Amino acid sequence: MVGILAAALYTPVFTTAITGPGPFCLALICFVLLTAWHLPPWAVVLVGALGGPVVALLPAASPA
Image (cartoon, rainbow, N blue to C red; front, side, top):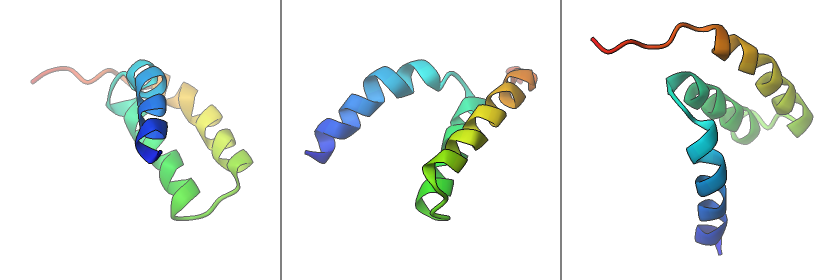
């Protein structure tokens, strides 16, 4: 059952929303806030909503 839920999250969400290291870090931060720090979901949504524009303003990583 958990595998089906993970697959349902991965395919539409992860493959379209995580487009680089910035969005991945934001998603990871939100995940840690929910699981390790036990913040309420509304606070994590607020962090994600405020972090999205910040991530968009970051320069794209260029290959070395």
